[in-house]
Image (cartoon, rainbow, N blue to C red; front, side):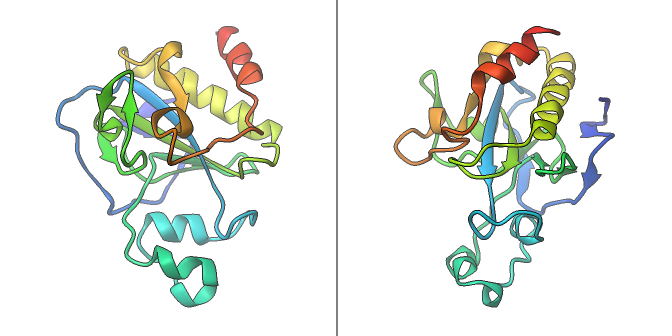
Length: 181
């Protein structure tokens, strides 16, 4: 995988308006999330609509409270393995919310957010793991402050608020594949 001007070449671009400049050039944390809109529903347009501010409230009752929410991630890995990038890696995406990593607040300032299309208690697909490993290897090569010890789930930086990527995420397999590089 190649990164050019902070965009993953293999990803389809779907620019989000929900980003801003980082307070510094530091990129030193990778946060893994999950998302499904509506919950447990895969393959639809809801995720892209949410991250681009176009989610139609009337399309599903779950969408109504999400109106006006400004949220984004850098990258989405769909269950099919498709990569969709919303925010350039050098920009601050709005994915972590109120968060802390090793005592440092405001993780969006220095983190990259990768969303896996999925849910806490449903297994992720093999192609998602393959893509996640390939993307992680590319990010580790591109951003020298990022390392294997600075990869975590959303639940680790917002433990009383978030549960993703959930019990279904196989951290051991992911880390074993990373260690092969």
